[in-house]
Image 1 (cartoon, helix red, strand yellow):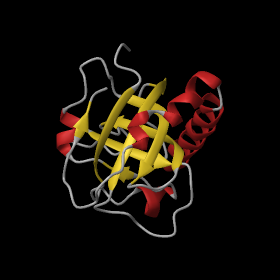
Image 2 (cartoon, one colour; image 1 turned 180 degrees about the vertical axis):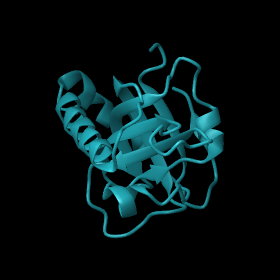
Image 3 (cartoon, one colour; image 1 turned 90 degrees about the horizontal axis):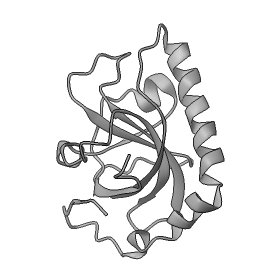
Length: 159
């Protein structure tokens, strides 16, 4: 995919409410405007990279882009799981991500347990890949050094 790494930023919105409750894997969701701005060569599937909430620390992340076939979503979404335990929700705060690499295409699952197992496998793959020097350097990109104002609704896409 020519567009990787891909940098994007937008406010965290409420999603479907399944990540934390049903899956035990909380996600931060981007608004439609960010999803609709994805380059054509960013296909649906599971990605890994780096993420930061507002001006906080930078964490490893795994992201699902697509329609979540298990749930048969009608709307394409970008759901980011930051590989870090947060004490509270951060709806409305600015999420900055750099998508570094692709793990796999999205696919359907026969059971919730099968889906959860796949997500945990994706998380482990993301952790391994982000430890590679060529991916670690993106954590230091100027994109993350820019101070974010939580009062702005600016959405930045592209790199």
